[in-house]
Length: 164
Image 1 (cartoon, helix red, strand yellow):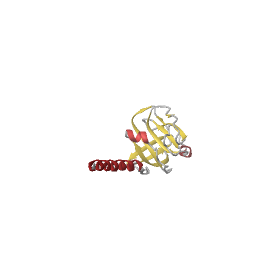
Image 2 (cartoon, helix red, strand yellow; image 1 turned 90 degrees about the horizontal axis):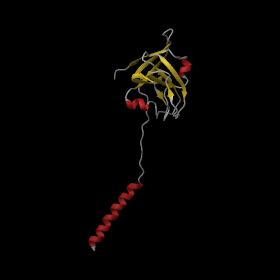
Image 3 (cartoon, helix red, strand yellow; image 1 turned 90 degrees about the vertical axis):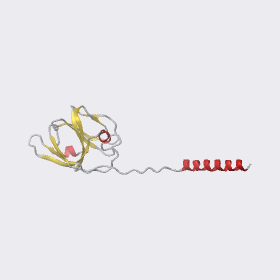
Image 4 (cartoon, helix red, strand yellow; image 1 turned 45 degrees about the vertical axis):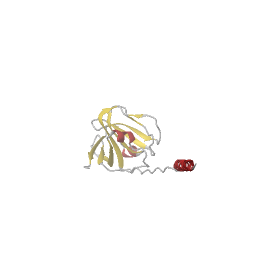
């Protein structure tokens, strides 16, 4: 009889510990994604090669980086941008899934010339925002900057990557 009570007591304690675990809440700690300067980029007017703007850029090169881009960020400064670098030029299409602030998306060819600009892409919009020709680079900046700079197709970029 005593063995039965001990077995019942052990079973009760075991069930109680599982019950307590089930009732615990799980805390999910997330760290805000912040901008990391990885290089410099200049936008140049095609006719004169004069500098339109200079930006600090973060690069998106790996598969994870290009798929994530600026998602989950709260914003960035007007002097910052993200440059997506692909191994070869092809038709590209971006969207704004999980992106919290509006962007201008600038498609750029192998010759570092602007192909087309998707202006004022809206947060969380999952509509396809395609390039109009094969692009090897894509630059994302805050919405409205391309108009402020007077950026247009055939304007150019050049960039340098910081040693890291």
